Amino acid sequence: MRIVVQRSKAARVTVEGEVTGQITKGLVLLVGVTHNDSESEAAYLAEKIANLRIFEDEAQKMNLSLLDVGGEILSVSQFTLYGDCRNGRRPSFAEAARPEHAIQIYEAFNQLLREKGIHVETGVFGAMMDVELTNDGPVTLIVESKA
Image (cartoon, rainbow, N blue to C red):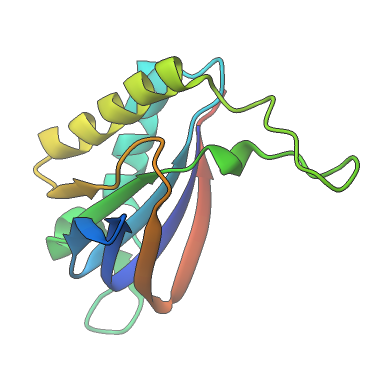
């Protein structure tokens, strides 16, 4: 799995003009799944992201986690994170998981975050979405599973 993590002051995702997910302070996650990913990768990343110390404490140091600040998550499926642009001019998406596999891992990942007490909003898997956010910092990281 590959996830782009963006610290956000506010974010929302819309599909065909309708808001499907919206958060205030927290993280926007663009979530990509590849063929070999399983629920163990989802569990590893849910734990990692919930506890990443990327929010500022009273001394303005990044020492607090999403759990520490009571933040929310907007999770958006993003198969294009596995786009390979090394050859030619059109990306290859051969490393992106098939939708029937990716949706299972994506939904398991979101559920694991919810089980940690985090409020999780989502887009619509497989839909064309508009994602808006106010990137706080900006702080943007790429987090990958061990596999």
